[in-house]
Image 1 (tube, rainbow, N blue to C red):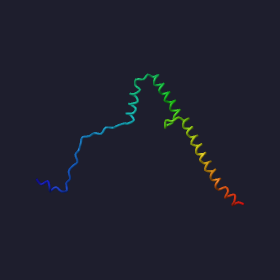
Image 2: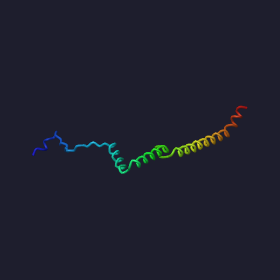
Image 3: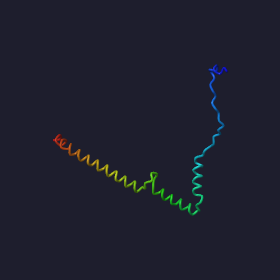
Image 4: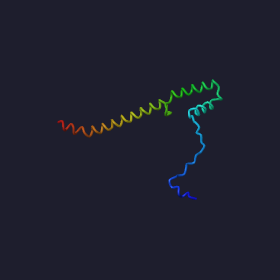
Length: 104
């Protein structure tokens, strides 16, 4: 009847009976890997580990092989060297006559 007189009091928040569970992401990943490899024999596991190690040695984190990376780096250095040589050729062609005239 006199609820409108309760000016200073606010409503209470609703409470729920929620009990949070602990989630271990590392354990979930490990369980997924173990489930995926559970049907393999020891020989299959050994072959998979050897091939994974060989693949890791041939590639880096980006997935490209070191040979591809070194080839791309060589091409990049060659292009930069070509660009710098071209710029130097044009600058010498433009400014060398004025420098030679100034020195005489």
